[in-house]
Amino acid sequence: MAYMNYIGLLNLFYERIQCSRVSNNGQLLYYTLLAINNKSSWSDWFSRTNVSISGMMGVSEKAFINARAELKHLGLIDFIPSKKRGECTKYRILYPTNYSTKCSTNDSTKEVQTTVQSTDINKLKHKQKSISNDIPEKTDFSDQYTTIQDLYNSVCGSYPRLVKLSEARKRAIRARLNTGYAVDDFRRLFETAEQSDFLKGKNNRNWRATFDWLISDANMAKVLDGNYENRRKEAIADAPEGRSAADYYRQYMCNGDSEASGTVPG
Image (cartoon, rainbow, N blue to C red; front, side, top):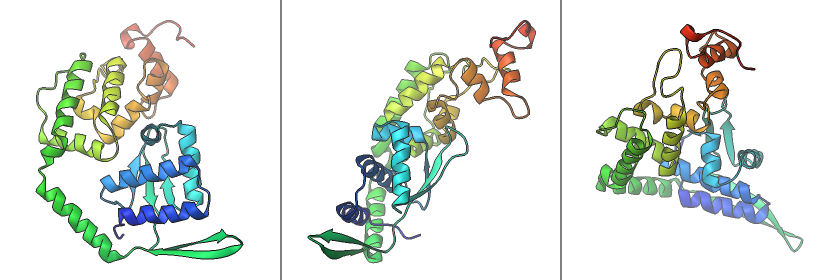
């Protein structure tokens, strides 16, 4: 798949909204998806959760879903919905090399055609790579690394203290930031983890989450989506395969097999 000129896509979209109505939320979502894909180096497909994108837009999840359906109907994007709540949906920006629309002005029709040249795209790609190579990686994210480490240590008092950020941890943080997460999302992640009994070890395996587990892409999305909230939601979200959620919840509420007696709350 050829890389797309970011400015070229914006121009194409501007021409589109001159000729056909696109809602405010639809426009906002399109710009948001462009920004995410730009940070992902124009991947053919890229993934984000509903809560992450709607949070970036500052709208409800319902409003985001309506805007997403609108853009797909207009042929501007394609997406593959996640199978489970909290998992990432795959997105793709649709951009034909030749795009034309017909606008009606004063009962006359004017055809607007815009062509994105591959030479311009390649020039932009090489320019971006050159800039990236000239600037050390730590210059871009060093402040965020320190801030996120300090947030974890100050908020997650029930977890082992994070003494050092390895290169692997920095890569994981950088990957989350590059796909649209902000420092405030990490703050919510750590606050949710600190409030979750399950993540702190109150489960049938005595398993406890770690910093590395929390900042992985899939796990961060699930925690922010509320899959590990206390009590019933927490138990049902992580019921092991082959066991019913009710059985898992019964053991969870009774604090382990040694105390599993009596009637389970309804």
